[in-house]
Length: 380
Image (cartoon, rainbow, N blue to C red; front, side, top):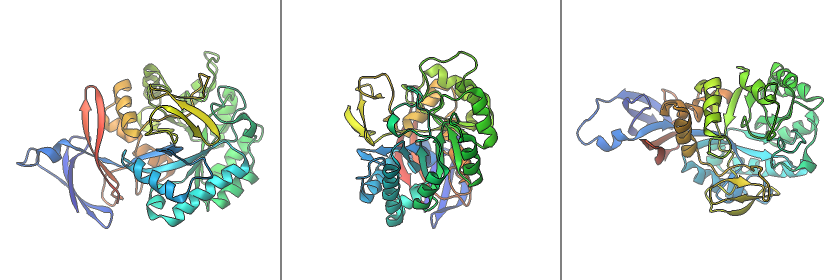
């Protein structure tokens, strides 16, 4: 199979794909007769989303969700350019989390399409802050201290597929949990936290590598200087994931965060819930009722608290360009190579190069105002 498109470097190339792998990359002289359409489309790596709670009415946090529905969600989210993702399970009882893990494992074992798309499971909670604000939409009754024995049971049930865990280092025992998880090969992320700067530093020293949706899952008001946002922002050992939907973070904050972390240490996530792709109205994230407003903001009903998003990755990329002045290539990197590097997938995901798995997106790009439209998606 051969496919032509323009890289974000503006070089037009022909790719040869053999048995699902890129086996040749040839530069093409621009403006060849009859090639105008193909040369106007950008050829991008498939997007990788480290935080996806569900899509198009299918909830990864509902034990009643079937493996067939997970397959459908995988296919539909792929239409947005996402060829790899981490199904994300939020705070719940141990039995609830185990039921969600079991459903996902069944879908992975049953359907090769799901197995190819799932990069690993993301457990976001339940070892997070009890405080209003930092806890976000997570149910308070199920928030608890880190428990390595409990987590190991989940990992056994997941057949070793949990790759990312988000927690708050404010709990006693959190640093030791982070150390054990890091030594076991997991990526540990700090998120939904009210931790002190000293606790943040102890977590990073123990192996934490990511800030989950930095600037969200936090108090509405904090001390202006010594606080958990500045501490994470300043530590170059931490990458930062951002939800760039125009609701979670103001434009100026996105610009400042990306400038400090740099495009090489920033990861775009959607944090999309099952309501993504559906009209405004009331929905559920697990057992938590949420409301999608006509402005496409997801709230806990009757509160100012956000509860996930209905963001899609092409919009996140376009808004990142609009908010920060980053190039298209830099914004795409935040949704491809950076999450791949964080999870240790760089040998086969997140780039266009020889020997790479051929998960590719063809898209048109409008610079002013920034807009990325998916034309086609190639899976292996």
